Image 1: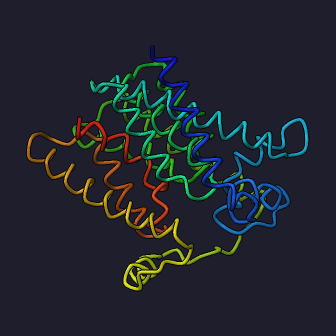
Image 2: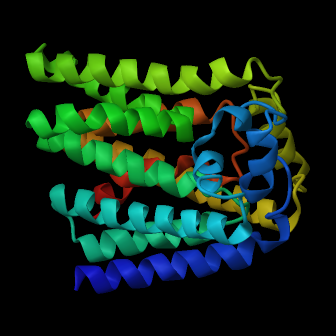
Length: 291
């Protein structure tokens, strides 16, 4: 049953994504349109340093839209399958929880970003390995974090989450995992910076005032899709605040929950809030809070 559900949800998200993002798939600042500029070293930060998808798309032959869509679909399958395993591990119904995640991903599919699906797959796999522990985690987490850093720098919250375990007492396992994953993320961030050099950002790092102005004006730049995104963000914000308050009143937070709270708060600064896909990893803890 799990294979069937994962397959169906992955196909649903993929179809919804392709239909929703068809109009902006060729723009040069994200997704498929950014592949050639990134490979040629002509993109702007931070896309210039998010090289995993462009490098995969250029393996063996020139990048093509078909190859890109295959890479995106693989990321979606990975996100759904790894999240299924994570939800099952934390003790919630994986069918219901993964369906909720798929619904969020469909709602978040406004702009073309294949790396967003790979990000969820890498986060959920990392959290699962942290929870399982042992030699397997120590062996797999470093390369996973290195690849994650080539995808999006946000994977730094994996070693941060591991480090939070140390607040409950220093033990050799979590200390070793923290050090090796932090080193791997640092290396993964350094590689594209070393290859392509410094790049100017295509937008301000602090987007808080921009977001507040767009909400105040009521007509966000980006049209109807992004306007809907701000509505979705409002719903997400209420869910995050409510979920964390209710959980905090009933029990202690886990390190993963604290890590994702820090992730959510930090992402409020450099992102457009209406693009709720940037908050997708938070759903890995938020959905179980409500189930």
